[in-house]
Image (cartoon, rainbow, N blue to C red; front, side, top):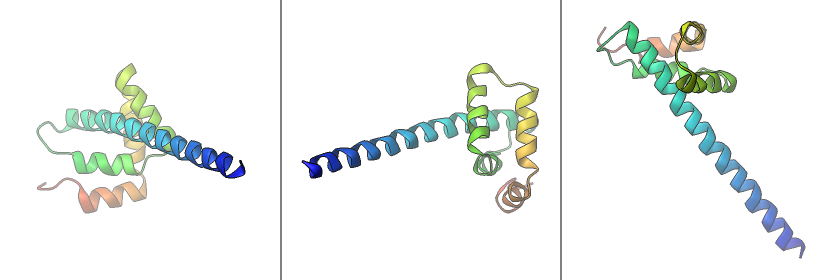
Length: 104
C-alpha cells in the first residue's frame, strides 16, 4: 500500500513539474513576442531575435510574466521601460555584445 501511495505522489509531482514547465514555456514565448515586436518598432527590417533572446534570458520570472501579460493588455511605455531596464543589466549587455545585432 505504501508503495502505491509513494508511486502516486511521484506521478503527481512529475505532473506538476510538467505543467509548470509548459506554463513557463508559454509565458516565455508570449514575452519573447512582445519584446521582439517592441524592438522591431525601433529597428524595422533588422533581425533582433538574438537581442530578444538576451533580454528574455536575463529577465526574472516576474518580469517574464509581466511581459507575457502585455501580449494581452497591449504594449505601452511601461513595456519599453521594462525592456530597457533588462537590456541595461551587465549580463544582458554582455549577451547582446556577444550574440546580438549581427551585421551592424
